[in-house]
Length: 256
Ligand code: F6R
Image 1 (tube, rainbow, N blue to C red):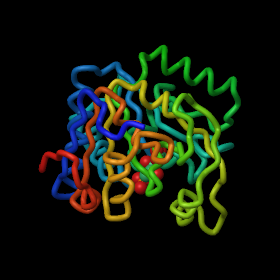
Image 2 (image 1 turned 90 degrees about the vertical axis):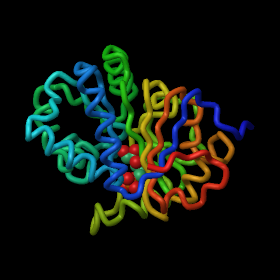
Image 3 (image 1 turned 120 degrees about the vertical axis):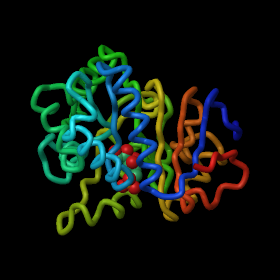
Image 4 (image 1 turned 60 degrees about the horizontal axis):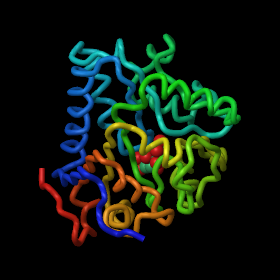
């Protein structure tokens, strides 16, 4: 198993704060939206991107960024969830960035089909392909090393598929669904789908992510830590804060 970075271009930046890192992530998107306004952009859901998504919404409202001609999608959805269902990924993305609601209404926000049938997933993949795949894929990492909902043990070759959520993933989502139970299964972009995006932008913040970040950047590339597969992609930016970077030992990082 290979342990060194394989990416032609893997840049790891340690920013002084979550706010500073979120600003860099937003600027990446802003720059691409200017040069490639008709492209497809794919978001990750969760706490990591709340700051960036709120800032994106403000820029759209102020007229400084336009999503009018762009296409938007995301990584994963709880099995059986409709796009407007509370607790679901589309609902969460639109709550964090309400400007996305108008894209949803006009059909330029492509929800991951929560129904999870082979036909629906094949249609979704075909649509992404028709739009030339995501120009930029935002990613977060689970504390167990998952990307999207590819839990440890995932298959590298998989496209969109239905998966069972790991125990730590269920624990981490508990507050979001309380007092109801967390759904146990989800539809997710597979490693192959994620690696097909043109550029990957991974953000990870906080001490709780430090071990997973180390496994992602310095551990074996394989199913033990699905996030480590990003090292096989030719164009990756990883944005960390000092806490999430605190266990790195031999990764070359740029400060700021
Ligand atoms: C969700 C997703 C997940 C999260 C990860 C981190 O769409 O892709 O892999 O990015 O679980 O979640 P947060 O950001 O809540 O720590």
